[in-house]
Length: 380
Image (tube, rainbow, N blue to C red):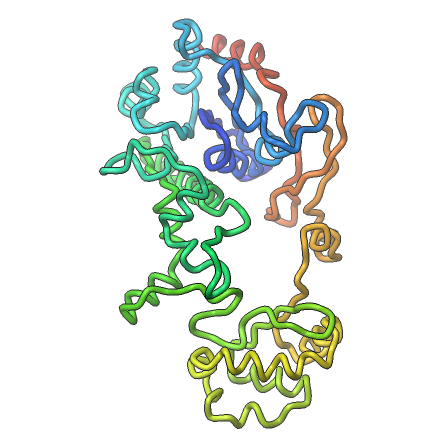
């Protein structure tokens, strides 16, 4: 039995942040019903398309059921309301005010269903001067400060390579609704949760905001380096790069020992993590003059033998082939609704040793409409 087995989630969401939250809940055993328009979630059209079905859509919509409802039609709008009132949790990621047009807002639903946990995911929040503005991952990354600290020191603004604003908001949403569900079951009183992409990005920027609050200076781009610690970056070696995180004095001394250098630990410029961070440009030059004598695998072996955190710089095909990923069984073979075989990365968590895999393939548009409408009719 999975932790959220028996919990019904109704998802009025498109694209990524909201659907990712729904995916996390579905992985934990919730019955997640995805409500789609006749045109379907926009993400169904996003590449890569395998024989007419989006691999990207499949990656965040496993373990869900799909029902098609046209909210412009009164009968479907009434069905949507019945479905919402049958939920323990409702997720939506429309702009503020849209759900109210269909009588599906929290104020309306909670009158009949006070224990409902209702989560609104948006770019900027449900209130405030930017509440009605739309936002995509890249624009929120730009506004949140992330692009001011991503990339090389003198490079052009760069976003994080993964859609971190979408995924962080999805994580906050999933965490928030499970916490609120615990309260609702104890008290009978639900909540309206306001999760924004901008707020989520600030919520995970503790390192950068602490630097600003503590020093009065805006953090800057440092490539792969750390503003308060060194050596803590990707370093060039004979056959490419490797990552090294020797963030304490003991680890720093062990890293120097690994390459047979006894003078660097005695240099007063590098006596503490803070001093090493302040002088990390010259430290990088001195270290890379040593590292250039070694291949990455040799350096990794030397560092690992001394307990110094380090890693190869993988691309995605390499990390997915790593023995640890294979051991944890994080990649699973699946079939898309059209029968096309593919693979997906499943939930990385385990519950009591149990792997959280794909119990239900990502749905074709409206695949469960008849089934779900029959369920809500039976509940009436």
